[in-house]
Image (cartoon, rainbow, N blue to C red; front, side, top):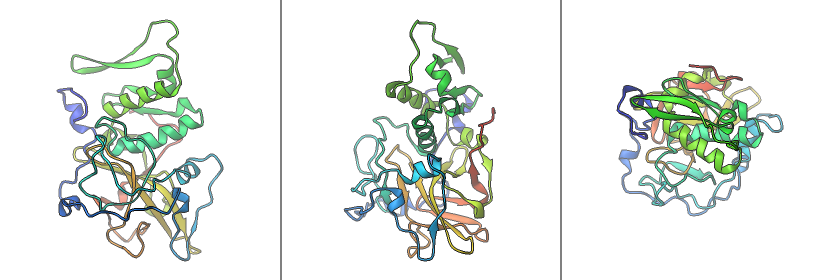
Length: 290
């Protein structure tokens, strides 16, 4: 558990652990990945033959995700600097800090990418998430002094009273993210997203199973052929907190790292989690209150 609170709500936060199908359990001894990643960004990863990337608007979330930088080193590291035990899941590693605490796990990575995009666009009001008890964590309110604290067994919202508390710099935003990762997870995030058919998958959509155990992965790019059939790339963090990485497709090595958006397939097998096709979600224009 990521926060020291002895009430039922915390049991529903992000626990990125597979209850039955555990690819990581099959690979406790890490196999070294290819040493060098030749792709500088997500957009540089080549599509399968006959496919082209979906058209996107400038400054959109889809375009921002495509522009995410990738590390040359394909090794996934944990928050404490140690290599992850399973080095067979990743195709490439995003060049984004994981921090130095065990917080940025699965849903946290999804929320981090969404929040980072909106922060880069200065759309502070839209950086909006909710805790299990319904406390709103909105960055515009945070910038104006809005905070939460644990009082007894309840999380309580309050406002800083000190003069000159307004902040929107990087340090302020990082403090907001730490609070977000502490009090939100797969269960709260799933409730804020809207269901979507797999064949309509778009960049920025989320595969998510809320609860404990639960997991979440984000779609970082989508390609399409002339018949409208789509394929997509998935990225994840996991437990313990670790580098966000684009994953391989364990079921179709010839297509990897691309996954087929096929409604006839009931399951989506990823290296460390199995989703069903009806667990795809998308972001509403305004995230609803729980």
